[in-house]
Length: 72
Image 1 (tube, helix red, strand yellow):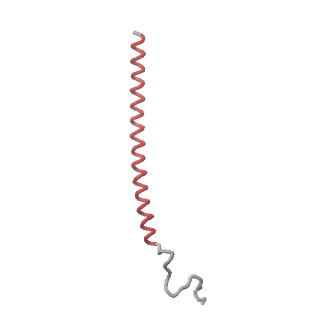
Image 2: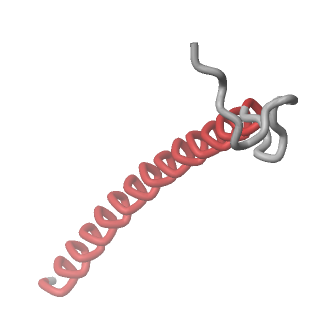
């Protein structure tokens, strides 16, 4: 009988550990989903900011790279 009780206790302990493991896995999955959403948002924002910045090769006409504006 003692062996059957030990086996039952060990089985119960394993079921508890498996349950906690499943809960942890679900929490981690939710964190990953949120982080991926944040990454996607940041990628879109960076892309929009890059479109707002003029390209380095294009300068305003009439101004050379070393020309300084006149002082008043």
